[in-house]
Image (cartoon, rainbow over all chains, first blue to last red; front, side, top):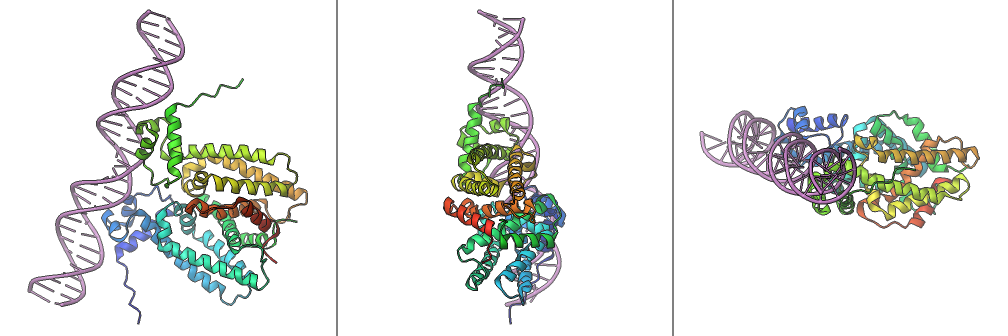
Length: 197
Length: 197
DNA sequence: GAATTAAGTAAATAATATTTACTCAAATAT
DNA sequence: ATATTTGAGTAAATATTATTTACTTAATTC
């Protein structure tokens, strides 16, 4: 049997929870270790017992979010046939995630990409995994004749991610509302059919 | 006549230049005021004479870059007719800028959006100005029947920016090469005609 | 029951940002 | 021609924040 998942100690959980709730209101840079410790109700030293530094804690929070996201995506794709239908669903699920999990959106869109450590983190491993999934679906679509073969899959993936992210940026930054269904419909239509009349 | 542009003092210029050259190699967060002062050959105090704090200096560097970019864009659009042709040119010019001015790309894609101060900065005013230009061109295209009228212009703008930015992200982060002409052709084609076969 | 270990604390230290009080030289006004 | 102001710049002090260290304490295991 697999090793029983060792329960995290209270203190660690409180630290992670404090980080999440502080990030809902403030930027990563503006948070001090003291802030986090006070909010969590632990001492500053304990944070360094579980995390290498402030950024490592950030990456841990992102990783947990991303794990949930990937589980949900996998579920969402069950029973969907055809590459375009899968992409449509992924677009919807991604927007839904950014719209309803603002801390997740803020971390990934605003806070991590400026640090080299991120690209060595486990969180980034998950991002790459999601990337590969997307590329595979695009290739499947090309092979099936659903998707144009003259556009490199990486550009298609960039267009999908980039468009979604920009559409959700104002949500992450200014807390503006996003209508998931509407946004997904418009973005899918735009990417599938183009802007030319 | 307009007030003669007062020449910046040597020290200020050296500080700005030091910031630029350091940002070519390292992330904003990793730069200390001491680093910047040593590289510029001035004392730390002088930096605070001209800039409110480290971020204010970053915003100043971005503003100078963006001013140049807008001047170039305006030139590039001269004599081009038709909204789609203008968008095509803007896509090319934007990619060219990110590809050939990596510090600019790094600042705007990775370093500023995580701070509230940025959105109050003069640099951001210029970004909004560019945004408006793009929206105006899109509306012109809709009115002229070149661009679909059933897609909100803001989504079209997000798709254009987002796709370009994601395509240039690996350039900014990992210093990967970008073939401007090729990228512009593919992205324009993708956005104008869609990915569906 | 002694030894080890995990969870946690408190205080010290190190790194860094920022402020303060000053110097000097040039420009300007009297 | 000199006193006064001002802008450029410095050096050192201070404030803030991150990180490390040395230590409890309570539970587990040998």
